[in-house]
Image: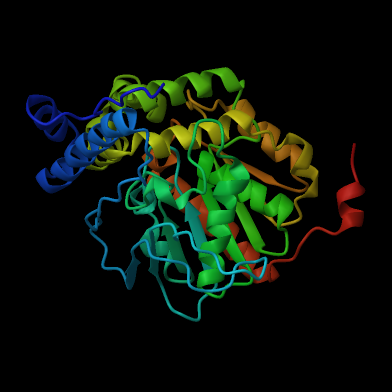
Length: 362
């Protein structure tokens, strides 16, 4: 029996209040509300006629105060996949900026945010790198339809990492530097462990090799599939930010607006990936130069997770910042840590840790 989906952001007073509270533009609010109503109407029709509907793709407005060189919307991948077959799924929505001949750097966002979370350090990073920021499925400009199967319990971290490799393949990058926040960091950790030849360096920010028991993530996925992301907006500011005032800044409101606008199916699919995620047995395989950044006041992923990552990855460095889960709350501290690590990697030429070196130690 099909269950009717309820719109997560109804038109009318609730949408107006949410738009005002989290600084969502009228155009974006209307797009999101329209998407919610379309999804509800489709679910009702599916329940009545027993048919399936493709996920709705809603165009997202460009965002950001920085002038970018390219902003690539979701489009069919028309080149060969890594297996030699033509891939028919879509690319993640992403933003590309920096000199075309500069080393590539991919930046992964955290669950519930968009590529906008990486805007503060972008001007510094683009001086030396070709920077690509992407949106997770169902977040920002990426539709949930980029996933091969967004049904409950079907999305894995490997699926998300594969989408990132599709971006690198699309741009012709054999290898790239990678930095990611939370889930975005776990994607990079997976790539460094299972596709070591592709990752020149890794930075995992407020991330983990194992984000706890599966059940809480599965409950959150079910809640969001039923009610949208609106119920999360009450508790998320305290989980994301160490200082309450950070949630009220224009940038904080913008990130919370991204959470409000996330497609429930895509957000829930990412929760499914987190529920099944356990990279702890694979950490010793990572040979890329690695920096782990932890937040001293991170309530969502406490500092012990960063310490476990740094201890498990050979020769990894650990930098602790006085921040909550979104280290971008302290943009200068994060920028300094990230640029110092990347500069050192460029000077070393991306030197990896040999197998012999990995065997040294307890």
